Amino acid sequence: MINSLLLFSLLLVFAPLAWSDPNPPTRAHAELTNYGFPIGLLPSSVQNYSLNQSTGEFSVHLGGSCRLTLPPDNYLATYSKKIGGKIEQGRIAELNGISVRAFFKWWSITGIRSSGDNLVFEVGMVTAKYPAKNFDESPECDGQKSAS
Image 1 (cartoon, rainbow, N blue to C red):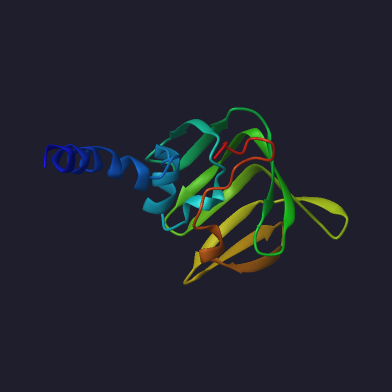
Image 2: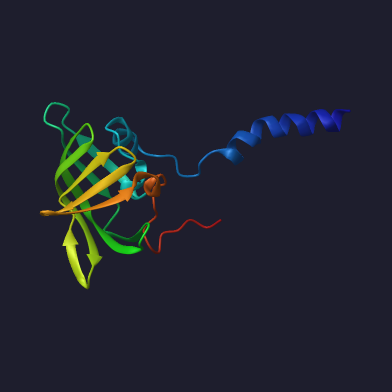
């Protein structure tokens, strides 16, 4: 009886830890959701961010530059150590610090719009639409995967 009670007590204490996300989203990730975007637009390596509530100007600081593969078409992307732009509900404009490799060339992503269940990525005057659900999880930078 005592062993069962002890086991039950240990399960109550440690079960929430086992089911919780090992890398909970940062405040920067939470801000993305406040503006209608999924957290997967930012890698998990966010260390700090700032947001001017009146102008929407933001900057996100990563631990260093980051290289990763974006879903769903496995485009190689690079994030600079510092990412910046202006955010408002459903729109990120004047974006700098994120590039994607497509058609054998690197392209700077200059803006992102949330459009229903889709995200519209802007590369200058060209746009590409992808399902927002592809960005539900915050990716890890290549070479920085946590040991499981």
